[in-house]
Amino acid sequence: MEQSVLAGKTIVLGVTGGIAAYKSVELLRILQKEDARVRVVMTAAAARFVGPLTFEALTGEAVYSDMWSRADGDAIRHVTWARECDAIVVAPATANTLARLAHGLADDALSALVLAATAPVLLCPAMNVHMYENAATRENLETLARRGYAVLAPGSGFLACGDTGAGRLPEPPLIADRLAWLMSPKDLSGKTVLVTAGPTREFIDPVRFISNPSSGRMGHAVARAAEHRGARVILVEGPVSLPDPPGVTVKRVNSALEMAEAVFASAADADLVVKTAAVSDYRPESAADQKIKGSRNQLSLSLLPNPDILAELGGRKRAGQLLIGFAAETENLAAHATEKLAKKNLDMIAANLIGAADSGFSAETNKVTLFTRDGSAVQVPLMSKNALAHLILDHAVQLWGKEKG
Ligand code: CTP
Image (cartoon, rainbow, N blue to C red; front, side, top):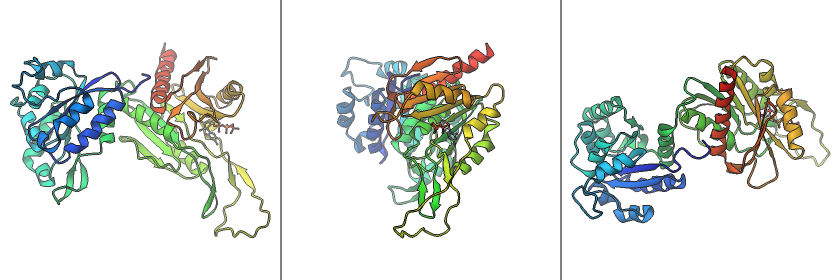
């Protein structure tokens, strides 16, 4: 799976009449950026909040809202679009639309289309907190969940109506993420995946540390991809400024020693360990309690080696467990990478040459070569870190298959 799971897919975006309808425009753009084809269905109430023209201009396709219109010559568009779509996301889903869906009504374009669909459906309720907590809405949501609809719980906070509580439409990137989850094959279900990400910080005094520019993006991409594919995922990460991936257990650490402790605590249960973290090889022998004052004199730091976390995991690897490392090199890529693969008892190492702007620490993309134990080297073209994450997981699935076979 080298592309986003949404790429090339046809998604029906159902928009209903709530104040959060304006967020549907951003959701549409996110899905389009993932190369999905999006068709928009609006209820009459939704069209009072956002003009259908906005969606028509962005999709290049007529919005479907009037079941009785013959404008495009398709008298059964609710059935045609239901048949042609790979998934449906209703965001926002009002209490009224949820009630219609729960009772199997088909008296407007959206409810008829959802009733006619066999594709997975993601419902994103958004409304006033009391409407959300009302027994009628709760029961409708329970009914829909029981029937196999995925429901994304609303966020809590200050609502447009002035009340505070649950009812906010989650942010569009989270909705797109849960849609990708819904559409992903669950080939890692039953597996536990442990991922490390980001840099470590080795404090010299309370305000200074040794670190590196790792953004944590590669590790987050692996954690998200594994969660989408059904794995139980534990992410041990150094300081990064990325939001927690949904559905993932996140353990935050600072130093290499803390990372080692957190990793060893979870490693025994892990079927796959992917170590993208850029671990500091050294730490100051002692960290000063107080800020070191600048005296303008020469200062020497005595550094102690940190444990090589991955090498230790390699030493205690159990049958069926896979270890995948990363290596950022400045020269002799193949030689250094294969040496680390052997020394740390890894099953695969993803190695890249640092220096290029499109690859490495902070970039959105990466260009790596995958070296495996059997001596193969697969040169992967430049791709997004999300796509690379899926490719690495594909290799892990293949390696398990070979072990079995
Ligand atoms: N690694 C680790 N613990 C360390 C150092 C590295 O677990 N103390 C892991 C990294 O997460 C990565 C792999 O080992 O998956 C290779 O990291 P790298 O820094 O390239 O390797 P080193 O063995 O430290 O080699 P170098 O001498 O190139 O720094």
